[in-house]
Image (cartoon, one colour):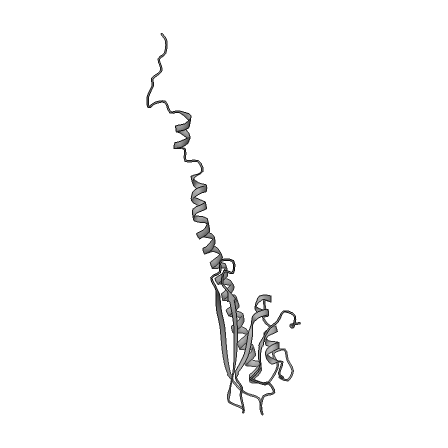
Length: 166
């Protein structure tokens, strides 16, 4: 007895089978989600970098205020007008070292008056995407403990430079 073929819905042509296939949908979905995923990932990395720079600025301001309160340079020796420059060069990373601003905002006149050090850095947040800059700053105030007037000047405002730091 010859076999008869049933025509109809039980037989699917090759073109229809490919049209119903879900091969490649994962790649398309990933391509749609990947930019947002990478933006979040690099945002987290940049936030960690900003937190590290803020921590460095806080350390620099604290170190500078301690040195200024006893009329000493941050690297040792009597303080002079290179005080801010030495402090700017003490920044831990190359990028921060090239753009940090160190300023003595309040200079003491006699023993017991406050001395204030202000550090600042303008960090470009997600530079490839163009989210702008994030202004980081830190201030530290301590009481002047040395005898006599300080040997540094409050008018100095130094931006660290890659070629000027040892």
